Image (cartoon, rainbow, N blue to C red; front, side, top):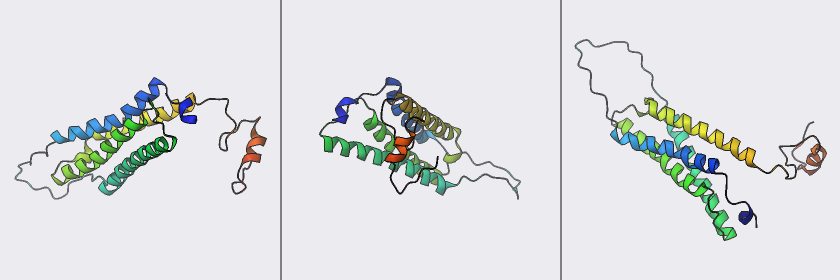
Length: 180
């Protein structure tokens, strides 16, 4: 059974898996304390004022899409565990999916609510930095996972060595041509 042979992952990968959505979760929780800026009492009314308006629709779509990917990742993990009748331990996928789902959907919901209340949530530096660091940690996670893959496996479709190129071409599906 595949699940019983390669269960545990390296500790840095486990830490990155949990830390990446946790940054966004802590940022979403910190939005509870955000207050709208006080109104500026000014006898002079400005006619032309340069303002930057964030694209709220795109931001909410991307946060919802990220939330759904965490949801589907968790569902795939649970379905895999139910089919194989084995819950893989120390993979970090279960806690990653749960924290990511709560973090990104919570940030979208709480950010929208605070935006209606007058807080410029999408312009806050801490939100931008948390999302950026989460992205950087996800890229680092993909790199570490790629480096920890066993090198003795058979050649796959997309990653071919020069010695096994003929085997890759012969194993490729006929509907996907490979140009050398």
